[in-house]
Image (cartoon, rainbow, N blue to C red; front, side, top):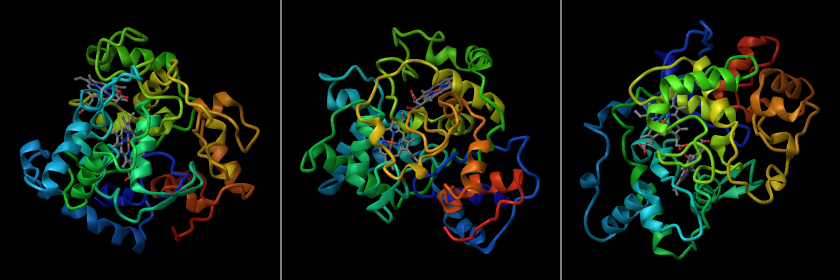
Amino acid sequence: MVAIFLAVFSCVGGAIGFAAESKSSNQPKELPVSAEMAVAAMPVAVTAVAPSPLQFDDLPRGGEGELIRYGWRIIDNTPAALGSPATTNRLSCRNCHLDHGTRESAFSWRRATEARPRYQAREGHKVSLAEQVNLCLQRSLNRSPLPDDSLELQGVLAYLRFLAEYPAAPTDAGREPYIAPDRTADPVSGEGIYRQYCAECHGAPGDTAQRNTPPLWGAASYTEGAEMHRLLTAAAFIHANMPPNKKITAEEAYDAAAFINSFHRPPLPNLARDYPALREKPVDCPYPPYPDQFSASQHKYGPFAPMERERLATGAADFRLYRQDRRQQLSATRPEIPQQTSK
Ligand code: HEC
Ligand code: HEC
C-alpha cells in the first residue's frame, strides 16, 4: 500500500489538494514510485503505535506539563478558554485539527514544529510556529492574534511541541492523495449530499442561527481568508473525515465542499495582499487578484486542472510548488508535464 504514504510531503505555498485516507474510485491505477517516496514512507510507518486517541489524562503533569495542559484546553474549547467578547466565532482548533491535532488526514500538527520558521507563499516570508498559530486564530477563528509573551500562546506552543513526539491517531489510516474530479464543482448537487450526510449534525442547509456545532458558514464560522475556504482543502478534509463514521466519495466531497463554501462568511481585511508573489497563489484560492485570465468563479469552483496546466505550460508556476499528491494527479492526467523529482 504505497499510496498511504505518499502525502508526507507538503510543499511550500502552492500546496493544492490535501491527502485523504480512503481509496477513491477515480484514483489513477499506476502511481509512479520513486526512491523519494519510498523514503517518505518511513516516518508514517510508525503511526500504528498509539493505543487510543490522545486524551487529556495522557498529558504530562507539573512544570512544562501544566503549560501543555493549558494549551490543550485552549485547543479543545477555544471559545471557553479565550472568551469571545470581540467575535461571534464558535470554532475551536480541534474542530479542524481532529483528535487534537494527531490525525494525519486532518491537518495534523505532528510535524508543525519541524523546520520552522518556514517560507509560506501566502505570507511571502518565513513564518514561525507562533505566527502560524496566530494566522489560524485570525483566519480560521476570526479572532485577534495572541501576544508573543501571553500565557495563552505559550500554552498552545508547548502543546504543539509536545505533539512532535506523539504518534498519529490510531483511528487514522494515514494520508492518501485526494483526487479531485476534473470538473466544475456543483453546489446544488452538494446541497443534496449535505442533506443526506451532514445536516443531522451541522444543521439545516444555510441555517444562520448556528445552533449546531461546529458551524460551517455564517458569522460564527471560518473567514473568507481561511484555508478551509479553498475548495480542494475543504473537499479533501471532508472526504477523509466527514461524516465521522461513514465514507463518501471524492465526487460527493467535492460538491459538499462547494455547497458549504458557497455561503457568506466573515470577511478578512487586506486579502489582496496575500501571495505577494502572485504566481505562487494556489488555483483554488477563491479571492482576487489572480495571476491568470480564468474567471473568479472557476477559481472558486473549478475545474482546477486546466488552470494548473496553463500555469505549468507557461512557466507561471513551478511544478515544485505542488504537493506530491497533486503532482501525481497532474502528471497522470497529462503525461507530457515533466515530473520533477526535487521538492
Ligand atoms: C455525526 C455528526 C457529523 C456529521 C454527520 C458530519 N459532521 Fe462535520 N463535524 C462534526 C464534528 C463533531 C466536527 C468537529 C470535530 C471535532 O471537534 O472533533 C465536525 C467538523 C467539520 C468541519 C470542520 C469544522 C468547521 O466547522 O468548519 C467541516 C468542514 C465539516 N465537519 C463538514 C462536514 C460535512 C460536509 C459533512 C457531510 C458530508 C459532515 N461534516 C458531516 C460532526 C459531523
Ligand atoms: C476552520 C479550520 C481550522 C481551524 C478552526 C484551525 N485551523 Fe489551523 N489549519 C487549518 C488548515 C486548513 C491548515 C493548513 C494545513 C496544511 O496546509 O497542511 C492549518 C494549519 C495550522 C498549523 C500549521 C500546521 C503545519 O504542520 O504546518 C498550525 C500550527 C495550526 N493550524 C494551528 C491552529 C490553532 C492553534 C488553531 C486554534 C487557535 C487552529 N489552527 C484552528 C485549519 C484550521
